Amino acid sequence: MASKTKEEKHLHEMNRLEELYRYEENQYACGKTIIGGVDEVGRGPLAGPVVAACVILPKGLKIVGVNDSKKLSEKKRNALYDMITEEAMVIGIGIVDPHTIDEINILQATYQAMKIAIQNLSITPDCILVDGYPIPSLQLFQEAIIGGDGKSISIAAASI
Image (cartoon, rainbow, N blue to C red; front, side, top):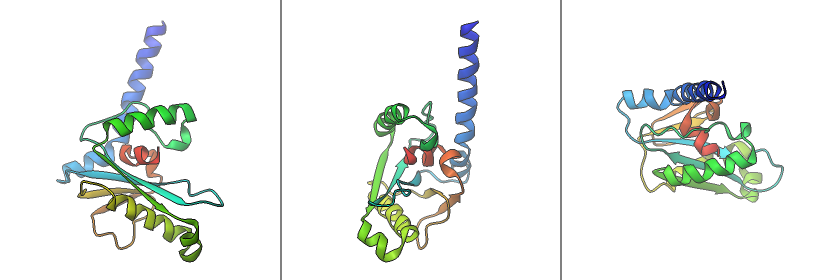
């Protein structure tokens, strides 16, 4: 009986990952080849920098357990972070300091951190999947996805 439960859990996770990969699959079908997911990390704190990450995963890679970082325990997040850093083609990080946040506001600072994360990639993507709204004046093709950290594996990986 326990093995059937494991099988059912595994099947459920595989179906969830297929759904989480839908946005990437759509972009590949449209001819995109290098897809990055971008998300801000730690926008909620009252003090400190805003940090964003951009992650490019190899085509077809579906890491079991990847999800919106807010839905994961710290232990699971840390384990997935290690897997993502090992498996990702490239990761870019962008940081905007508190002084700049005060000057330009948190939303503009978030967009700036996302742009920096994308600029810090060693590979230029031909598509960016962004959590939330489009990044203003980004010179790359982008698809904005509201709640993207729970809908796109690339954005979920960036959130972790």
